[in-house]
Length: 279
Ligand code: HEC
Image (tube, rainbow, N blue to C red):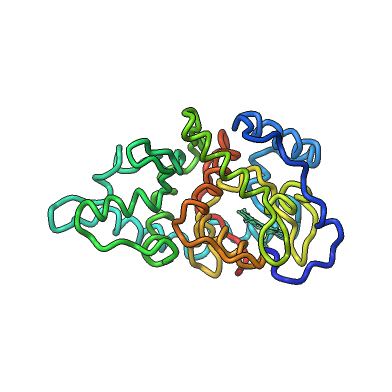
């Protein structure tokens, strides 16, 4: 099981993590979850937790280390670099839309943009640049275009600390929206993301250990069967398997969830393009 894709049998899934006080301060939420995870997994550092299931499963960890670098990653990074530096008809390029040609930027997405009053994911920022220069947009879940570009741009942030900001009231509201979604039961199985990832991180569900919420935004895109998949793609797959109609790709809901998870990864080093087993 990669995400909940079978009927629930386990009674332990029925209890939901005690929710936080409403509209909690993002830093307080992060500290509380860190403390909870430290208590549950005293031997694992937050950076270790970013390995997903492998943080709790020695066989998976060994498979991950055999697949480092992940098969397919080098080719995708090359293809992404070509797309990133390709000159549009007007002589501009994706690289030209971002500071320093995009070096390090991935560590700071999603980010709140006060001009459009919305959270902007890295995918949205890339498409905004294409739109500005009259180029066709990339599908958020297309591994050959957006996936390759993400693989390259996130490789330019390798080792940088995730630094997602929620310092304004508007950004804190978006964080709160992501937190609320994460803790809300949804879909036919009446589960919340937090039911598994907060209450039961490390526990085996199906054939995989449930990853921690800490570090969940660090290793993207993941390479599965040699192809990149973004955090947004994964969130949508999980929702589908929970029996909840997935929010559309690029929707505010998905970006709020991504923002919440990225905030919880603050301070951890980006490790892009990590291997994961096939979905
Ligand atoms: C029934 C338990 C369950 C629920 C509910 C659930 N997940 Fe998961 N999730 C898992 C398991 C188990 C995996 C690991 C699958 C694997 O790697 O084989 C996983 C994987 C993930 C990953 C990838 C982590 C990594 O680094 O590999 C993310 C991100 C994630 N889930 C987010 C979510 C979000 C967001 C929700 C709610 C919309 C959610 N999950 C709901 C069990 C669950």
